[in-house]
Amino acid sequence: MPELSRFHGIIIRMFAEPSAGHHEAHFHAYYQEHAAVFTIRPVAVIAGSLPQRQQRLVEAWAELHQTELEADWQQLMNGRSAMPIRPLE
Image 1: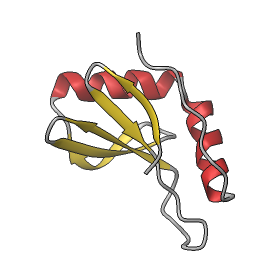
Image 2: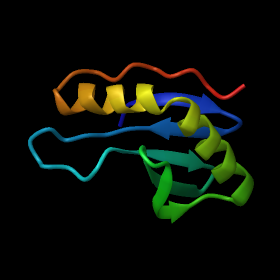
Image 3: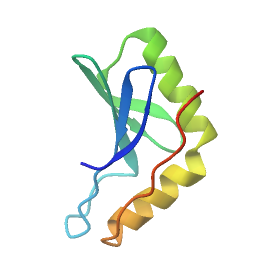
């Protein structure tokens, strides 16, 4: 699963399978032993969980980078590589 960004101990990844009518656009966030899946628009947790502070950081980052996340989703759905996205600073 391609890594898009990494910040404050959180890893953001995205995976799309073009041939398998995948779910709505989403990304995965990992922090230590925790993992969650977030939709892109609107930014919302759809599976798993992160500690509250890390979830807020991921949500803030995703709000700032929604357009880039959507572009990466389209890239992956078209069989191309995703582009890295700046971390939250």
